[in-house]
Length: 420
Image (tube, rainbow, N blue to C red; front, side, top):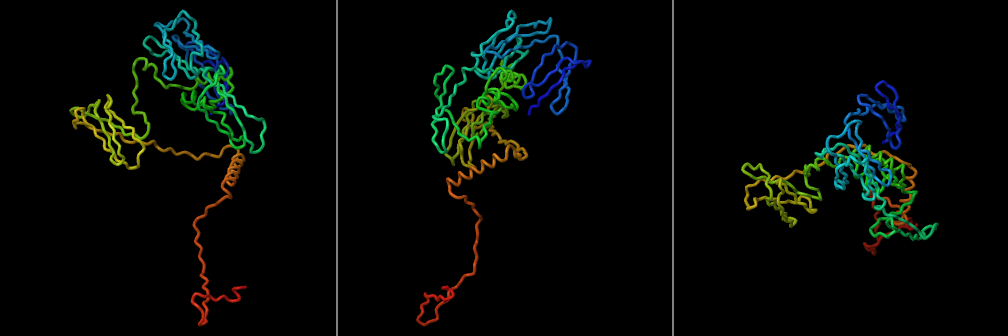
C-alpha cells in the first residue's frame, strides 16, 4: 500500500536544492533544473520517520523528450531538447491505443507544439511515442483520456421518498447519451441494504475496463479517478500514468515488422494439441499436414491441418472423465512417414497462503448472520439441526400370557398395577 512521503533534493555538496511532498497515494512531482556533470539525491521520509536516499538520473547533453499537457479539453504535445542540441535526423510521432494506431506522422520542427481535441480519442490509455527515422524509441509518454461523449448519463428515480415496511417500490432507470438521447442495452441492477452490505467504492466497472485491466501491478483505489471527476483527480490520474509501468506492446519491434507469435494457441476450453514432423530424419516441421481425431466412446470426430510451424490444436467439448481419443497424422498424400508429438498437460504450482485474518467490524458481520438466520426461519420454518444417526437400545417388556384353559394364545394378561 502507498505511504505519504516528504523530502528534500540535495546536490553533491549537500546543499538543499528543493523540497517535495507526495500529493496522492505516495505519488507526486517536482521540478528540477539539472546540470550536466552534477549529481543530485532525493532524501525521503515517511510518516513513521523511516528515511531513504536515492540518486536521481544524471543530466545528459543530448536528450530529446516528449512534453504532454493532458489536463484540459485538448492534448498539447511538444518536444524538448537539451540546450544547444539538435537531433540529427527526422523524428516521428506515433500514438496508439491497445495496439490500434491512431496517428503516425513526421514531427514538424517549425511548430512549438501540436494540439489534439480529446473528443477525437476514445476513453482509454494511450501511448505517445517519439521515434527516430529507424523507428527506434527516443521518448514516450502515457496519458489517460476520458471522452465525455463515451459515457452514458444515468438517472434513477422512485415513485415515493418514504416507504413503509414491506411496501412496494416502483423505480425507473433512464440511460441517455450526452445529448439526452435515450440509449438501448442490457443493464443489471442489485438492491442491498446499507446495514448488511457496504458498497465497495474503490472499484467499479469503469475503472476495471479502462484502467486496471490495462496497467500492470496493483492499482490502489482505481475508482477514485472516475467518481466525481475534477481537475485535481485528473492531475492525480496523470501522475499514475507517469508512475505505473505499462509495457504491453513492444511497439518498436512491431513497427519494424518483427511480430511475436504466441507460443501456444488461445485456450477456449479442453484442448488437444501437438506437432507433426516430417522429412528424412523427422526433424522438420510438417506444414499443411492433415491431422484427425476420433473418440468412439463419445462419437466425436474432427479434422484439421497443421500450420506453417507444424502445430495443430483441437478444441474438445466437455466430455466424461477418462475418455479416450485416437489422433492420427498423415502426409498430404495419405502417407504414414510422419512423427506425431502431443503436448503434455502442465498445471500451475500450488502456492501456500496464510488464512485470511478477520477484518472489518465484527458487529456488522454478526448482524448480517442474524438477519440471514431470521430470513431462513421465515421461509423454511424453525431452525433444524441435523444430528448423526442415533441407535436406541432397551430391554424388551414381555407381556404375561393368560394361564386359563379357556385363554387363547392371542390374549394377554394385564394386571391391576399396569392399569393404574
